[in-house]
Image: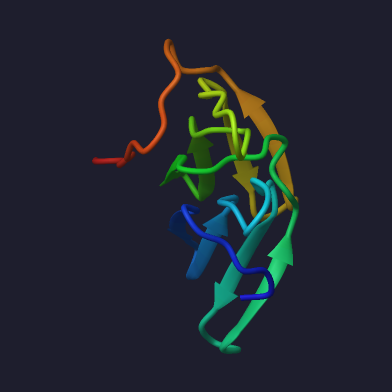
Length: 111
């Protein structure tokens, strides 16, 4: 990876492995990287709108969703916000927030 991070959310979308947010040694991150197994290389993509550590992520209809987590490294502010990444446009957009804040949760899409 280009940036060290812990407590990041991960998801697989369109053959790429995404590492979303997390924290380094001093701050929470909004940055996102994806691993391209065909090139055996990590690359940066657009950053999320919120810094998130301990968030949940899932993929639906070719888009990556990330929700919850904490936005502050020291005094945790738990998040109810959610956002969606479109790999075709390399853009994040906010979606409807969850009804309550969550962190260290999981997400899954079943069909």
